[in-house]
Length: 286
Image (cartoon, rainbow, N blue to C red; front, side, top):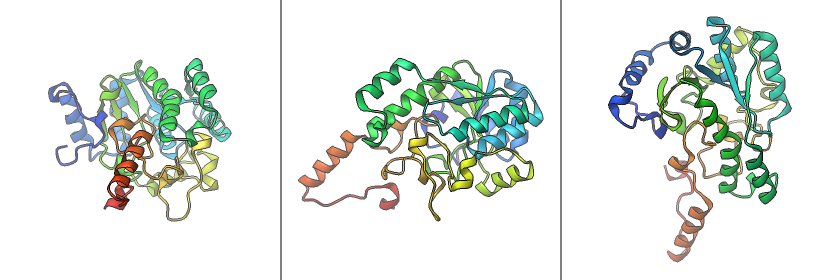
């Protein structure tokens, strides 16, 4: 583990000894396949473990694997109120195919009302701060409420998806959510490997993948990707300087996403320095 330490804060223990067994588990399962990790996790944590699914093909592959191990596996999703209709169709297919009643988690109504009434329904396009506030109310807070009832959760994160995910471990301590265990059984899979599994096992998948989408989120914040673009390019595409995260897998404040106040301060500094622009993104700087 010391050779590949996760870069996003929730994976790091507050005290080394409090999660010693998690580190041992991470080392033990780093070379294991996804099914072996799920067998171990279901034996250890079920029924206090659930798979997080948002419509992504990775989550569907995990649901299929886990169901083959234990048909009583639990699955939950965050219903933000802005999901594409195809997402609901997919979860109906999950119910029909696997007999799994997906557990829907909803945002707190009055919090959504206050934000939308103050800033408008499409506030996410106005500023990074407002987009993050929308994600916080619709996704981050409901997730925290859900995970407070669990001992472990499973996500479809993969290292190749995006720079903020390149060092995730297959077994992690989720410090942002009470120190519960977070499992990323597909961490070392490629996109092609996921699709091979889905097609070989006739796993249901989100219809929007047949229309150029590579990642699924809320309808106003997701678009198809263009040839040559990364999987995450279709998420919050109007934000060129952010980490393409909403905060449910790693705290946005701990990453490189800039607030509007920071952008304005940097612009003032550039102006005061004579108008010499600094690199706008991590990629540009490298």
